[in-house]
Each structure stands twice: as C-alpha cells, then as structure tokens.
Length: 147
Image 1: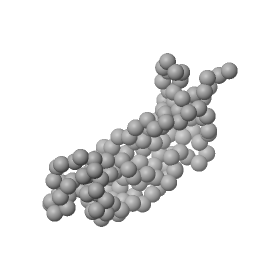
Image 2: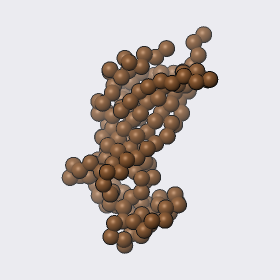
Image 3: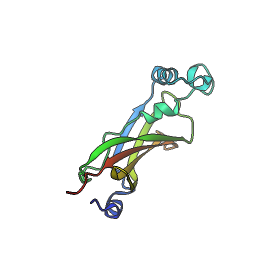
C-alpha cells in the first residue's frame, strides 16, 4: 500500500516543469466555437475584451505530468478531470509560461478499493510575470488489490 504522507512530504509544492506557450487568435477562436461558447469576448476577435476561454487554458500541458523521480504506483491510472481558475484575461498573442508542481496527493476508498488522487497544478504567467490563471489536472490511480 502506497504511503500517501511520505509522497506528500517528498513531492508537494516542488516545481518540476516549466513550459512556454503562445495562444494564437485562430486557435482561441476555434476552441471557443467548438466548445459552444457564445459570449463575444471569446468568439469575436474584434471585441475589445477578446480572450482565451478556460477550456483553451485547460488544454495547455507541461512537458511532464509527474516529477522525474516520482515512484511508479502501479495500479490503473485514469484522468480525474481538470479545473481552471482564471485570475486575469489571457489575450491571444501573449507569451505565457506554465510552472508545474504537485499541489495535492490524497486517497479515497470505495467499492472498487482505494484510489489515489494526484493533483498537478500549472500556474500560468504572462511574460511580464503576472499570474493569469491556475490549471489543476487530476490523475486517479486505482491501487491493485494486495494478494
């Protein structure tokens, strides 16, 4: 059985990846329209407040999902979902830098056994250093039953 407290003490809040991004106008518009967005600040590039949608920000991915020395937990990994907190508008054409760290590790037990949740957080900054958004990605690993 994986020791959650040991993983937390060794890996939480340590930056393990940086990635640079630039969202183009066409990409931002395509994501907005394909996800059913109707507000003009997301669908009209001529709008004074045109910006990327949270869905576009959720699609940004760092080069690594886990720290290089994170142990293999075995089990069956699954995507546990994503959440984006937009702090400031992200304008297409802005150079962005994503800084990734593990934000939380926890376990829950259910009918199928224990599941480990790993929350990887990317904080998204403008080239000027302004914090624009935070994107959390959850990985769920169903532990293999002990035999």
